[in-house]
Image (cartoon, rainbow, N blue to C red):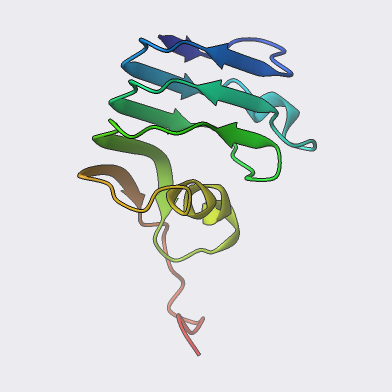
Length: 116
């Protein structure tokens, strides 16, 4: 199942025991000031592609014991705040066989220290 740029999506509820692939891409970004709300129950899920806002307090993922691959949205190499959703999503899983990340290297000013 692919959900891409679903306009005005406020809540996602998916109960699909036989679902093997799920992609959620840019469905909640238009409402970045409020948390995404989703409940996903897909016990046979093998691939999860999440390219959207994520908050563990409001997005509930059921048991996914067949999950093999997780693909995340952009991950900013020299940033922390924009990566918070990616990091929260990764914390939902104890073991991931394949992880897909798109690393973004924003330009860095030579006048600013990278790490202190």
